[in-house]
Each structure stands twice: as structure tokens, then as C-alpha cells.
Length: 239
Image 1 (cartoon, rainbow, N blue to C red):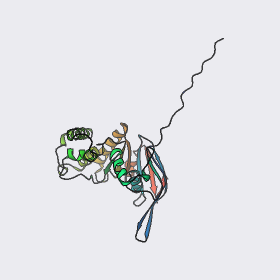
Image 2: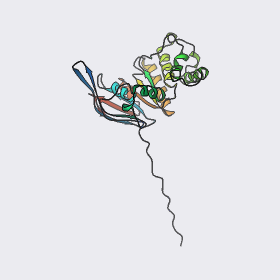
Image 3: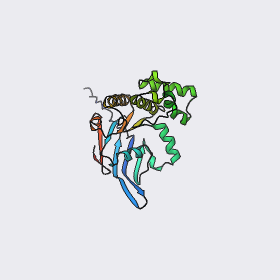
């Protein structure tokens, strides 16, 4: 008689969230006036997710983005990134953390007009003082090639189209090889064809492992993201 052997599958492991907001509230004060922008937001985002945040103007979606990037601090609740509590960091610690872990893409590009595309794409590495000047430019040139602008490295922003400027902004956001790319209306200043190109670029970066989080008013664009979070009156009403 032979003993039956049983093989047991290893228990499935779930990765801890990259971003976790718990009971987050935010009240802005102007003189005697108070405005509750967030009213108890709970939000968890796993590494490698692509998430679109939607909602009407004044809903609190940009405030959620500012919490995740450490630009704003919660009035109540906690904000954590990869287990580190952002709400407990000093402004100096937040600046260093943001430079190393987050790439931000703005609606209006925010490129320095007197610097070339290559110099703009290298800026975060200059601030971080990472590598030699030659290494910074080599890395920035690689990122311009990633976004399809390898042949425009020496152009000034004024010599580029809106879509090309946004590509430079995305290359700049990749400078420190951050795990999280955040877009604040990243296609809001682009025509529909160029906006589609930008979305496909963000989707490709997501497929390569980047966590992508973007705020948009464009519900058609948001619907193409694997996950959509809707904010209304300072609360998550749909996820």
C-alpha cells in the first residue's frame, strides 16, 4: 500500500496598497469662512493600477490628488504611500519624497520656456543632484525617446506643439523613475486626437509597471481607464 501524497498550492499573497487614504478630511479656511473639501475619503490603490478620478468642479478630486502627492495635508485622517505616513512628514521630507517617488503632469505643461526639451526633461535630476550632468542628460534623452521626442531634444517649448510639450512634461515626470505618475487634467489643454495619443502613452507606461493616477473632466477618457473613482461633495460616491 502506497501513501497518497498531496500537494498544496501556496497561499495567494496580496500586495499591500501603494496608496491608502483613510478617513481623510480637508477643511480650507479663509478668514472666518470654512470650506470642507473632503468629508471622510477612504481610497486604496494597488501598485501598478491605472485609476481615473472624476467629478464636477469643486467636488474635491484635485484635493484628493494633492493629498496623494503631499501638496496638501489632511485636516483629519491618514495618508500613506507604500507604508510611509505622508501626513506625519515635514515639508522638507515631503519635498525629498515627492522628488524621488512621484512624477506629476500638469494641464498647462509647466515647462521652463528658456530651457530646451532636454534640459526641461532633466530638471528633476538637477534638483535631486542625482548623477553627473552627462548622466542626467543621457537619462533625459532616453526618456524623450520613450515619449517619441528623441529628435526634438534641442527645441525650446515655443518650438513645439501642445502635444509635444505635454510629451516633454511626461518625459520630465519619468526623470527619477518614480513608481507613481500623477496627472492633473493631463489632456485638458489638448485636442481630442492629441489627448488620445497622450492617453495611449500613459497606458503604455502603466503596462510597463507604473502606477498611473489622473484627474479628468473627460468622462469618455476616464471610461477607458481600468478603474474609475468618482468624487462628489468631498466623498467617494462610486469606485
